[in-house]
Picture 1 (tube, rainbow, N blue to C red):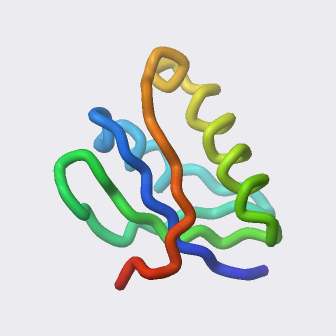
Picture 2 (tube, rainbow, N blue to C red):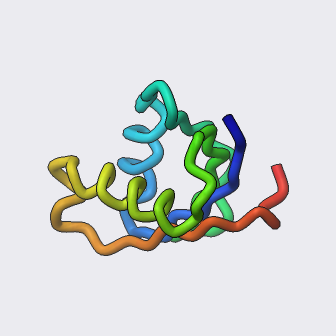
Length: 84
């Protein structure tokens, strides 16, 4: 399993943070890193997905599957320059 850093941009970062911190699947786990600014939060992702586009799609689908995510505008970016 490899690790990647992601940035999520949204006005509902607290909800997304709560959800992802409690989410754990065999091949997808999130650890909160930091708040970059009021609209951006960073996570370390433990995954077996090595294709960044597929990983972004998987995370977007996961967030959209929540009650708040289905009406939310947000973006997900893989960014390995995020400092812990």
